[in-house]
Image (cartoon, rainbow, N blue to C red; front, side):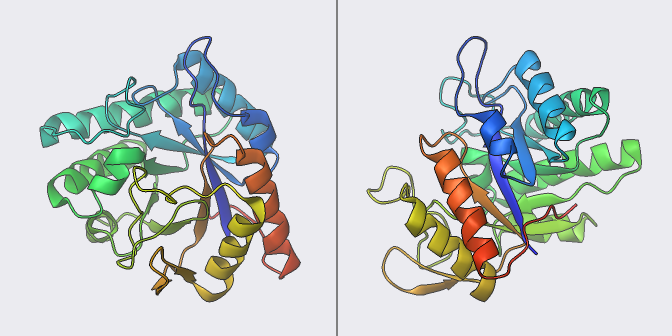
Length: 254
C-alpha cells in the first residue's frame, strides 16, 4: 500500500488555483496550504471540511512567508522566527481540521523550504522544533513528510518524530536524488502516462530514472502530485489507475 498526496488549498481570496474537489476524490492525503505561501482562512476551512468529509487525511503544508513568490523563493530566516512561523501555521490549520471533525495528521514543508531543509540543518532543526512543540502540546504523534536521505528526516527521527519518505511523480530528479530546479527545462512532467509509469516504478521498485539517465533510489511511503499543475487531476487519476493495475493499494499512511 502507498499513500497518494497532493498540494491543495493554494488559492487566495477570490483567486483559485487547482481543482481541490476533483483531487480530493483521488488522493488519500491533502497537503493544505496554511496561509503563508498560499491559502487564506476561508480556503483552509473549506478544504479541511471537504477533505475530512471524504475521509482524506489533512496535513499542514507549511512554507516561507512568501505569498508573492508562492513560497518558491529561497529565504534566509532567523531559526527562532522560522520555528514560530511553522508552529503558527500548524496550529491555524489544526483549528479548522478540528472544527471539521478531525485534526492535522502530518506536516509537510512546501517549495523552497522543503528543498532548503534537505541540506540546511539550521532551518531543518527549526521546522522539527516547531512540530515537536505542537506534538507535545496536544500529546499526539505528528509525522513529517520529506525527501529520503534529507537532513530534515534525520533530525526529525532523532527528535522522536515519525517520518514518511516521499517521492514526486511529476518532478525530475538529479542523480543525487534531489529535485531538479524548476528553472531547468524538463524539471516538471505533465504527461499522464509518463507520470503514471514513474509512479509505478517508484512504488514497486523504489527507483526512478534521473534526468541524466541514471537510476536513483527513491523508496517512499507517499507519492506526490502537485495540485497547481494544469493537468493535476489527469495526473492523479492516471497515477491511481496505474498503481491499481499492478496491485498496489492506495491508502493513507496515517
